Length: 213
Image (cartoon, rainbow, N blue to C red; front, side, top):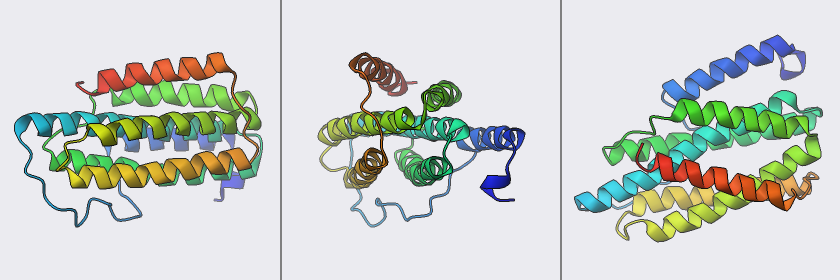
């Protein structure tokens, strides 16, 4: 059955299945991890824990990204917008898989609050989508801007010897910039400043929590 033939109930069931797979299953990337072939790092315990905390934040962010895109796609009015959001979600799934692989390499776990990150982000994405496709695409632009900024911060914070995590974050950043540019070119509207500030505050709360929990 094609995406055009799915009923609202079909889409809800598909989204419930996607949520369970994102939170509970091992994600599989379509593209090879940028960490493959990177030199092995001899990190001390403090460096390992810090790198793991940063990658746990990024994994939580990718859980949220899956939910945001799926929530927006569910209520998108235009089929081209829905398809664009679904393609972006598929690429973000690569990021999710890469972050999980990196956490395992660092002998660390994902955030225990992943179900909360997913549920809250799905609701936010659906609300953004209900505002209209221009605003939904504008939400993508602003989200990716903020993600790009926090990836820059994490790249500066990583232990210098952690080449594998650095390679993953650099590739993720390239994809996020491309997603923002594509959404802007598709007609994404500039979000009001209070909305941008609120988005930043929510993001900071998530990053501070996911670093440890």
